[in-house]
Length: 241
Image (cartoon, rainbow, N blue to C red; front, side, top):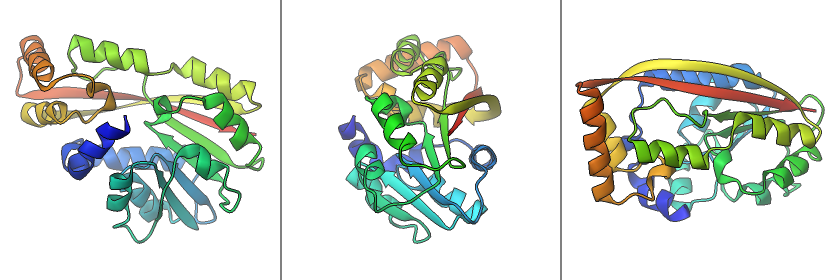
């Protein structure tokens, strides 16, 4: 998986073509559910190229904003933003490093990459204070994007259910709330196909270029349109002591 993000890092921001309105919506909803403000020390776990860490810092002006990203090439891109601090580290190493203090933690589209989540939740629970918050931004297993059948199945196989995540958090002492929202937008066919060819989602990394092209043919046959009507359904899972 690290190799996938290493390969895609240079083009990641160009490939990720969702609209600016989508990004503004995501930033606003993250800030709302995390209750971000200028007294917070905010951590974006798996922050990638720092795009959302930067936007959240600019919008809500926390006291400090960290972008935590294990892939070095992604980190180097994120370091262009001088208003955030980018740390090239895996999640456990950062959480267990007591020199860093924080009270708001975001896991945006990364929770399926963390293997031993129970250990992580336990470590975080023993680190944060009562008013601190975790927000997990993730999708349902049955994704609504126009993907080919095998890609949808791969996403389903890799994505933990919201019920599982909630159960893990509760078992480690957290109080948990679940909120579901959707954002609707249109994306030009060529842009979506380019995203698929670049394997912008890690779930696409197992497919060869030929399999991706066949998958695009499958999608075109099903939808036959110049623009795809996109619905991104998001689970916002908020946890606190």
